[in-house]
Amino acid sequence: EAGVTQFPSHSVIEKGQTVTLRCDPISGHDNLYWYRRVMGKEIKFLLHFVKESKQDESGMPNNRFLAERTGGTYSTLKVQPAELEDSGVYFCASSQDPAVGRGLYNEQFFGPGTRLTVL
Amino acid sequence: GENVEQHPSTLSVQEGDSAVIKCTYSDSASNYFPWYKQELGKGPQLIIDIRSNVGEKKDQRIAVTLNKTAKHFSLHITETQPEDSAVYFCAAPFTGGGNKLTFGTGTQLKVEL
Image (cartoon, rainbow over all chains, first blue to last red; front, side):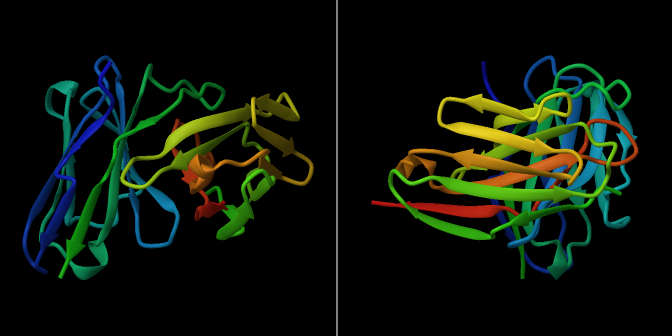
């Protein structure tokens, strides 16, 4: 079974440009998450989709970030316009079954990440 | 929200020795604590997790202990091997529900020959 895939693996852009990251979750996983790790710091939650709906986008830094998951399959994360502080590794993860309350946790499978460098 | 602190940030051990990584969390209601291993060029991969109804869980050379009173949990790797070299992250559920995780800052483990 294929794992979570992300594209591109690396992206180097200049400040003010636009970048779109793509994530293909494991087939059949309704839950899709985006996380980001800024150099040397913790992996921080950005947002959570259940199928095509945004369940929680409380971690999105600002309105320069736009995530979509049309059709409930793959997801894209667009940064427009990019700023220097957006540099980091963006991870996508997916899990089975919708989260139910706080008592049920399913393993999140992570993709290899996209390393974004904004110059 | 949940706050997770992880120590040490780097850890170097000799092959065959044990390694211990410690994490503390802030939300006393948290009840699920996964550990992830990230190898170079790859994404984090779950290696073991523990739920709050047990104090210890073991899987071959790795074990996790949980102290709910003190709100800390630890990863123990015994008989370390070079392939254990990686970045390890602890995590806890984000306060407020859902399946999202709050991660520690990571521990770079290096196992030296």
